[in-house]
Image (tube, rainbow, N blue to C red; front, side):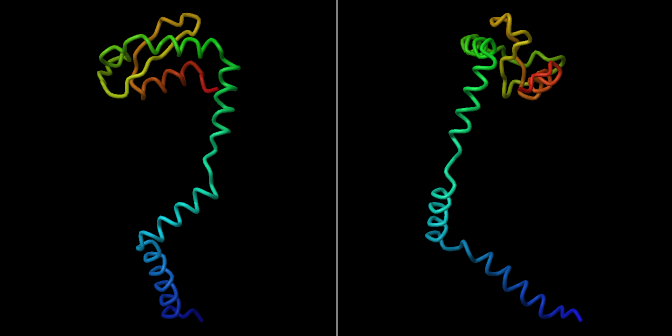
Length: 119
């Protein structure tokens, strides 16, 4: 038969131990150091991905580099959106690298989905 009292006693003991495990700041610091030692950031994978993207789409990378020097418009140019936060340049056609449109981040993602740019 199920003994609820014994179960709750075991549960509460485990729960309390979990709560008090990180109350000591020195113990928390040691855990963080140990974790970072055993789980280094996977920077190599990111570098490889960036190189692969540049190799696969040189025209996009060229257009993106040129767009850095074009000033952003004061607000999003998507429909009735008047957002002035998180503005980004967007290329509707990478064959014309200096023709950029200013979108907020939300609408930039939407336009990219409409144009099918996910790679």
